[in-house]
Image (cartoon, rainbow, N blue to C red; front, side):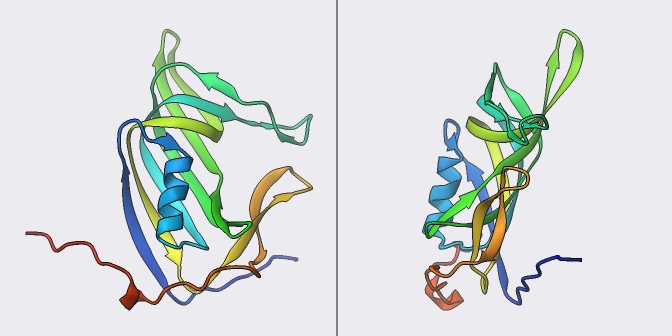
Length: 168
């Protein structure tokens, strides 16, 4: 077996809520950059609109051309690993989406190229002691985590981060 293993001994969690109208994935990448995330995992759910979705095309051996999904869709599942491309946080928003149609419940799946948030919440698990590159896997034509990043910025210690204000 040729499985690559990267261990993390330290993590933190970010809880995010996208504002209505935020454009994905750019809004998420901006937060990840501000939070100095160089490796992690994102999970989210909510409602999106103006979605452009690419599905894996087996005949091409890569993601197909994006197609526009009209109207609002519910995000049933959205996940992504987080790594670095040219020293910047990068992700691939792989989603299962649902919506009501005249034929009943319709399910859509693929990688979100772009979308606008109506309501979206996410949790990001940040692996504090890792910096991993994201690269296109030549065998399947999708972006995956690869080797440890050689050009990663050092991750700030927990004491250097600003905590959330205390609840009242």
